Every structure is written in structure tokens, then in C-alpha cells.
Image (cartoon, rainbow, N blue to C red; front, side):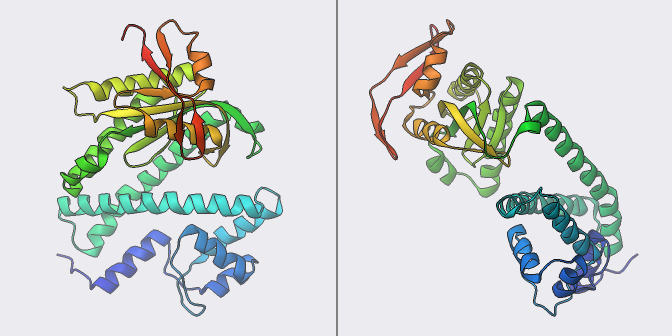
Length: 325
């Protein structure tokens, strides 16, 4: 039976395996080897959300040198300017930090289930799991990249506006419901909500931009597609036999700026404000969406009174229902 190493030794073992080698370099040595000013290197690591290391702390490997050198090369060929670099690296840091936390928890759960306690057992398990997870992550990224390219990413400058339908769906009574659930129950409940919404959005031709705990933000190329998705989600929440929570939705159609997988602009803001004033099970839309949806005989579009919300003193909402609903 293998002997369980001390916590410090186990940490070094795991760290060396994940990094590919035991750290032998300081941050100053990494910056010099990569040909990057130390100030630039420190700023990149800060944007990535990595722990701060002192100048004399041996905390880096050759892979850090390679990554820093690649960043320098992307800058030199004009792919990364100062603005793009900060935004891209920050996005990477946040996304991968969250993913790493979840994967670490998953690996720990599997290790406990298998009774893998010694360092050698953990390394064996990691060797079986991590290469496959890494391969799948690359596969998923490339598939999404291919889909994005198919929507015209090849000609995308990074700051141009395009017309999209933007929709928020959020849970009604989330605060009061969450107080009655344990942490584990709350996580399960929100994951079910996100999974169901994502399935409906993707199946009907939309794209999920992000999930916000008790809300989902998605876009579609047409207001009709987005409205169909939103109404389907609202109907699911209105079903008393379903575990899916009661929701409300706000949809706006107009130009948005897409950047690093997110969307920005007044259209997004209007969709958010409409959601905040929508009644349970209801879909509210703006004038841009209403003008398009009136042409659909399967829908009823009713003008409501103008209302005042943050940033918009006379917002004109319209409620959309299935015809005859």
C-alpha cells in the first residue's frame, strides 16, 4: 500500500504534474527569457487572476516563458493591442478560473468515490481524466469557433454593430425561494434552470450569451426566433406540474456591439429594463421588436402604457402572447 505523503509534498506532486514540471524560475527570469518587460508580464498575470509572486519566489516553469513569448509575438504581429490584450486576458482568466474550480471539485469527488487517497493514486486518476478533459475543452472551443466563423466572424472587427434580438429571462421570486433552500439545493435548482433554458435556446436557433445566476441572456438573429424561445421558456415556467421556476422575459431588437462573446449597447440595456417590469409568465418587447412581431399571425402584440425605468424616462413596452393564448 502506498504511503500518503504529507500535505506539502502532495501539493508539490500535484502542482508539478499539472504544470508539467516543478517550478524552477522566478518571475524576473521568466520575463527576461520571454523578452517581455517585467511590468508587462506582471500586468498580464494580474489580468489572468493568478496569485502575486515576489521577485525572488520560485513559482514559474518553462511553460510560463513560452506563454509569455507567444503573447509578445501576437502583439508584434498586430493581433493584440493594449485594449484587446486586457479584455481578452481578463476574459480568459475569469472563465478558466471558474472552470478550474469546478473541475477540481469534480476530480476530488471522483477520487473519494474510488478511494484514491495516496499521491500516486491521485496522479493515476488525474492522468486518466485530465488529458481527456483537456482534449474535450479544445474540441468544444473549436466547434464554437467554427459556428462563430459561420456567422461572419471572419469579417468582424471587434467593435462593429450588428442587428440582433436580445432577450433576458429571469426567475420570479428568486430571493424568497433561495432563502428556503440549502446551498446544494440552490445550486441544483439553478443548474436545472440554466440547462433547460440553454436547451430551448439552442434547439430553436438562438445563442446563449451568459447565465447570471437567476437569469439567462440570449440572442437570436431575428426577433421572431427570440420571441418564440422566450414564450416557450415562459410557458414552461407557467406549468404547475413542472419543476421549472416561474419566469418573466424582456426582449429588444436593434444594433448591438459584440465583443469577446458578450453583447453591449442600448438594445441590451432596454431588454434588461423590460425584464424588470414584466409580470410573471409575460414577455415584454420594445418598439423595434414589436414592429417585426406584428407581422406574425401566430402572435398578439399589445401596446402598454409608457413607463419610467432607470435610464429611460418614457420606455414604451409591448406585451407579446401566442395568438388566442
